[in-house]
Length: 59
Image (cartoon, one colour):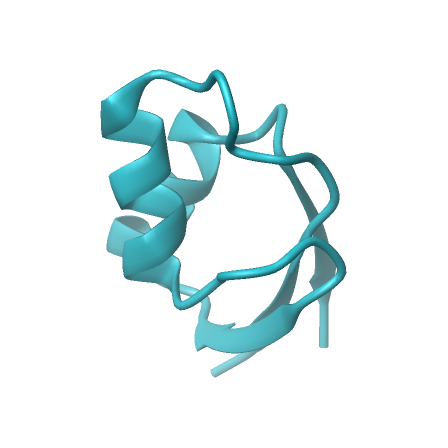
């Protein structure tokens, strides 16, 4: 199964509280921080919710 590398590229300051919680649930705290997550429907849904704040690469 493939993994996804998710990088926070925009600040969550001024973002909707739901989006802030989604970014935090993905494990991202600071701009430029990256995490690897499994490529599944749950993670894809979270990424879709905050697609304007993150950059996603397939590993």
